[in-house]
Length: 195
Image 1 (tube, helix red, strand yellow):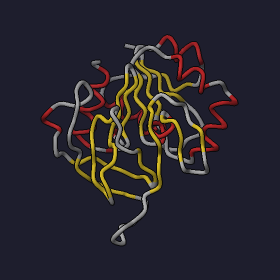
Image 2 (tube, helix red, strand yellow; image 1 turned 180 degrees about the vertical axis):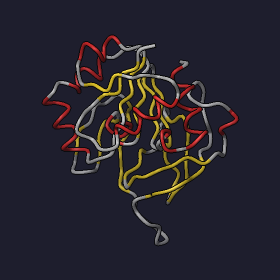
Image 3 (cartoon, one colour; image 1 turned 30 degrees about the vertical axis):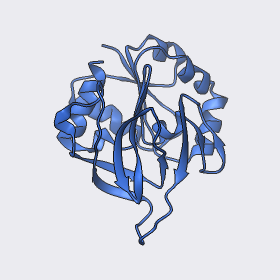
Image 4 (spheres, helix red, strand yellow; image 1 turned 90 degrees about the vertical axis):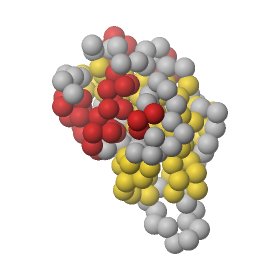
């Protein structure tokens, strides 16, 4: 199986590459369009800021490439947010795969932002999740969240209910970091690779 991890100006993308190595997958860490198109699975990870990242994606025509992909694609954290229509983070138009808005957490009881640490995921939908993962803890680091929509594939509660994962057609995404979520996260990555 060929897996491409999209290499762009976002932080923390290497941790996904190393998580795949632990699963025995030697992925291509690349922004080469031909390699990405040939891959059986594509992962679009990231930590960073929406507007400068979208600018980089447009400069390198990676925005067009990502929209054109027909194989299973997994967005992680910032990758999930950029797959949405729009982010409040610096008023950013995103890729428009998911018909959803990305909004900043507004604490109601002195909750800390960013939301950082372990939290439960619920209301899980196949094929990315199995019932065994219901109520399991995964690792989050984010100040912005994706609202709940018909594409929501898992939920989480912090300040309010939000989309912990999304799914539409061949596009899947998690707000949490499966690569940093221990055995549960490794299993979710395996399930994505089996789609």
